[in-house]
Length: 82
Image 1 (cartoon, rainbow, N blue to C red):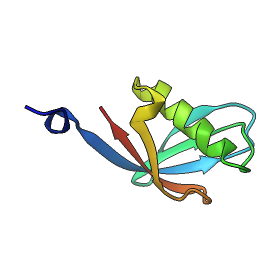
Image 2: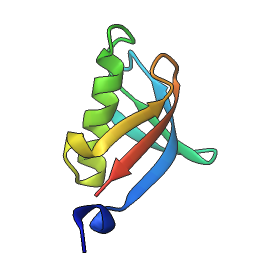
Image 3: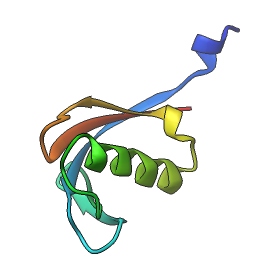
Image 4: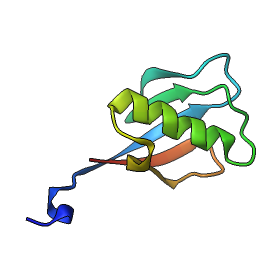
């Protein structure tokens, strides 16, 4: 079995609230997840914070989290691989 065959992926919608007082996973939001990050939505800072937060939440490294779409929007599609 190759490495690609062993890899599993999950995609989900994530609603991001940047500039919050702390980084946290709020919980379910519609068909996805709502998160708050303290980073400002400038120069990719909030996106990087979302990746770190989700990596810790799901117990994977940051290289396993990828923002598929919504780089400049609070509504994102995120892929998590294992």
